Amino acid sequence: MNRELSSRWTFFHKVVFPTIWIGGFASGTAAMFLSPDAWNLNPQLREVRWIFLLALIVGAAFIYWSGIRMKKVWLAQNSLVISNYLEEITVPLQQVERVSGSILMTPELVWVHFRRPTIFGKHIIFMPKLRLLGGFSQHPVVEELRQLIKEANRRI
Image (cartoon, rainbow, N blue to C red; front, side, top):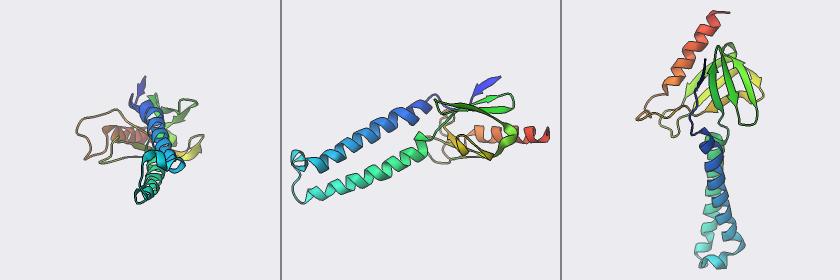
């Protein structure tokens, strides 16, 4: 009984969007510094490039925090199968300490915290399947995982 918990859009948010956004913004920002005359920036507007550099740093940090770290997650028997597209691990539900989810965030995110570190660290994030009009509450998969974890811990 394998069931995918993460969205089909995970690869886009983890790889495609960050590559395009960071690559494009970095290229434009670098060009502003390397050849400001080509941008026809008058001397007063040349300082705008520092704002672009700051936006690049802040934007890249946010994209890393909310997207690049995402994992693909499946529910299999009494375990979570977790992949970063290069490596895959299986973590028993008894090893999950807690689960939480974002509110008012797009894309929605779910955090899974483990009792012991895994090769992916002490916690992972994943993007659950998309839902309409769901921003004012945590994704239903958060409560579903909490219940499954409770049941798994009762069986110990």
